Image (cartoon, rainbow, N blue to C red; front, side, top):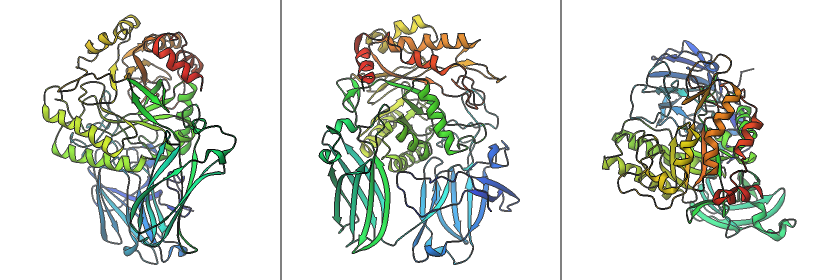
Length: 589
């Protein structure tokens, strides 16, 4: 039997019962099309789990495998899906060039029906990666073969699942779900293929109890409708506010979409949503119309054996569990578009996520085009996940290194903010996380100061916050200025603590577990005590390669008792001022 890897269903927000994984052993070769090796998909050749594990740069690699279409798929359309391939690839089916895709972070798919045979089919990929080119969307991937500083091992080729599914000629192609908490409703936008004259039935339920339904006779390819949640039908609940999604109450509604022609079922898709609202009002960050203090941890999404690819679905669950055990209510996924399986577990376990696109490093027309295209595909794919509350367009002026004085790069920051808001007005958007903001919903600051007294003074008044430059960078540039945005410190700490002989660095260093906990308290305490800081993101969840500034080691062993970290994160000394109100509101949920 063929060995399989990462066999869970890859798209949990849009589920069909019939599908086939193409993860497993593929033929593989470097540089030229000769297939003299094998590789374990979806792990890149730089990783141990790929079965290869070399860190040498190869700017072109080849993949090949065969597959047979099941007999019961005959007469249906066959859709081939790639979770992510870094960086540029050509998909070839039975000798036909089908699709060229650019961008290493986004998912893509194609209808391959017309190119298939009844017998064995050959699928090939030619992948090109540009390791030394700094104007591509690369994130934390280093442009040298050996990792260094804040950059890690590069990623080349397939790094998320490959799979196929059959669909009828008439089928549902996309669903966008927008919860409307204030209206006690949910809006559905749909797209279909060849479905004129068909009926789309939608049923919403909560824990098996029907909470609403809608029927649309299709005359056009696209449309939208709104379903009001039937509170009376749910019985045991008093109001819709009792059914909200939050980290403390991760309640999810189930949705079934059925496409029918007469009595014939043509397509059926299962999904879900969380009834939750994200907003900024009067200078406060609100979750479900209530002030909410975000206690986030920076999550690079790397694993020692799989690099950017989690070794298993359980690895996602473990990371979320570790963070929640330490008193964090979310994560900022840093410089990476994470696998939808992580978002699925964050949805059901109650864990906030800041979604972030990998940045390039040098500004160019190519970087602008690739970044825009990747962002459009990312929002389309992950819009329905309730866990995502913030989109981060850029990070620390990467790709816009001259943003302080270059108006073109400032326009790019502003354009990315506007683009994301135009695609998704239901979430908060940060233009350039850390400093040099041009237009943003949140004032986010990166500050690796280690001294408690300095942090207390720095975040003691809003005037002091605005005049400080923790990294020697202005908080606003161009025509950007503070307009009462909520203040969050979204990178800080970074305390290194050597465990199990790991070698590396951090922004400050602890010599023992007791010293580590003390230093953690010294950097978190002033933020919790500040009346003006509405959340934080600690650097970071785990060690990664040469960075040993994680709360856990690279292989997920805690460096300190998680209960001690939780006690600091839940510090009730911040019981006065506005943050005290936020903490009390959070505690009372």
